[in-house]
Every structure is written in structure tokens, then in C-alpha cells.
Length: 137
Image (cartoon, rainbow, N blue to C red; front, side, top):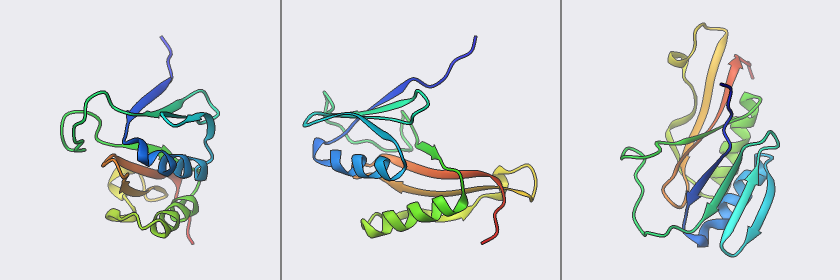
């Protein structure tokens, strides 16, 4: 059997819809749906994210039961750095001493796993990551 990721629904405070709209627009995702109660975004390859209000109000913690984090892959280390600048401009704290290389996630020294991690306004842990040949700045 062959499969791909179809979609994820992420329950959020509706006051934060514009944050996700801005973030994923910056990442090149296309808007599929937007109204006062829902935002749908597509990656152009068949996967989509849907942000809507929760039926039950509860706090999320990335180290608890459920999803730890959502990672979005980009094509270069420079893209990760551009995302870090975008986040800093929005006063979003960068976590875990990122952006940084994670050599422990690579098979050899010519490859890199370069990431930036941050929390959304809904306490959802997000990562933007480049994996591939090490690119010297």
C-alpha cells in the first residue's frame, strides 16, 4: 500500500487565525478556505492543514499525549534563516537554541538537519527544517 499525508485539523483560538494565515503564506502555502471560523491551507502537493475552533477548551502541551510538533520542510538553510527573521519580527520566541544544525540527526558531515523551532500563540510546537547537503554561508 502506498499513502501520503492527506490533511491535519488543528484546533486553535479563532483570534489566532491571522497568525497561521501569515505564517503559512510566508512558507508558500496556498489558501484553500478562509472565514471567521476556519482556515484551510494547501502545500500544492496534496497535503493540507485546517485550523478551526476546538469543541472542548483545554490547554495543549507538546510533551503531553498527542502531537509533539509539526515540521515543515524548506529547500535551503537560508529559508530557515528567513523564517527565523520573520518570527523575530513578529516577536515570536525561538526555542531550543535555534536556528541551529543538528549533526546528530545526519548520517555524515556533508549533510545537515538545520531547524528553527517555536510555539504558536496556541502553544503548538512548530518546526521549519532544511535537510540535505550542508550549505556554507
